[in-house]
Length: 229
Image 1 (cartoon, rainbow, N blue to C red):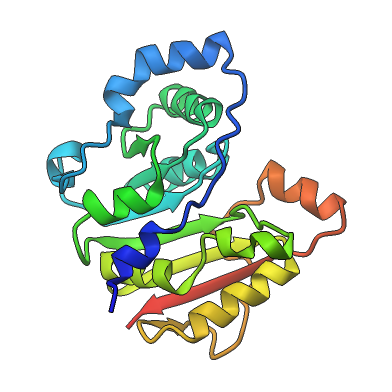
Image 2 (image 1 turned 180 degrees about the horizontal axis):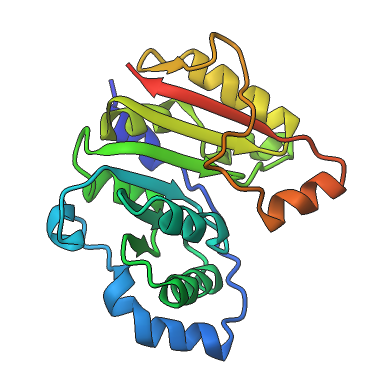
């Protein structure tokens, strides 16, 4: 039987539609990537050395423009944050925001999340994983491209310490139901609210510009909180 890593590797969680990087964002890469960025090397990473301390680590996959991650870094300085995002403009915006607020507890990958999880993050080394508003791939023929699949949540379980948290959020009802079905069937995860239940938006997930836009379009929002067993 294939390992969770093999199953997860088959998922391509994004299609790279790179937006135009502004001069300010390009300057962000030039000025801040050496401090904030992590170049994918395909080998286990010593994050204690990267951050210069030992602290609980939170991973956000697909942070978009970085609004929520920058807020978290400023309001939760006792923990270290890893962000993964493949779109350059969002990475540039986040680095500018981190520099402006003086946060040094975030490091960023501009790379595929599955490969980073497989190769660079040690087993049971994460306190929390956040995946907020991933691409819903709304057309039925594209559902296989959705990030939240059994193989991927098994890979996450291998990287999150027992008692750690997986926090998902989406504004697509169909994807919310899919997420719930996948997580309820995963033996490594337990619903914090009770079997089959969604959560209210917790205080650590701010309402982002993206979320407000979706709500104006009539979308609901669903949060799911699962603990690593």
